[in-house]
Length: 293
Image (cartoon, rainbow, N blue to C red):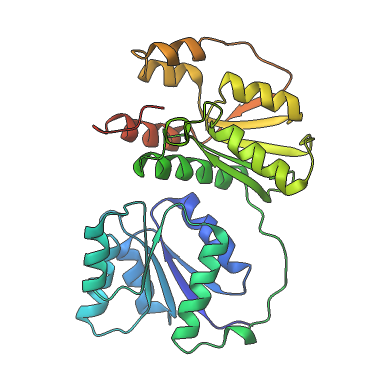
């Protein structure tokens, strides 16, 4: 039995569960917390070996948690997780003695690697942990959250619009991910769902994806729908509908024209994660210098 306890503080329940599921497959004990205050309380009840803490939480965020550690002389490795890649965040994290800063959305392999590296650095024998090897698999909600996080990160880094997509097998194993990059890549086919499908097809070595599932932060474009039919994907989950995006961006003629097509194909489209997708999209819409893809 592994005695390494990892505290995960994240106010988004699905993101918290996603990180927890990734690290629990490696044999770690996970202590969840919904904000900085809950993380502090968890510190008082458990022996924590590593803390993964989201920067922006209410009422107390990641830096408030780190300040508590510093004030009380607690030596604990802390990894701050944030979608903000500004130099101010890195400077502040360094001043507080934060061990690492990870950018959202966190790749599963990256999360595992960082956790192992930090724990080894603090004297834990990771090689002695007995882990039952199995492939990471996720729920529909977790995979939709992943697509939304990809979309938000893509918009914030000015690489493209707020559109993300994930392709999985029938069991929830991730096969490919994609984000929108029409302008940055100078590629009119660089829609999120198309990029994700390409990667999945390359990984599987075949163009038949009839046994795969697609998750999109927004309903696929007409071009994406054509590719979905071509590769024979049977189930597509999406966050925002064409109608909802069109109501937000109705002033943009090219978008209105593209989203005007309401024809449905044999593929089944299921809308989930609506509120999170809407929140992300509205934040992007409010940006002054957003990249209009």
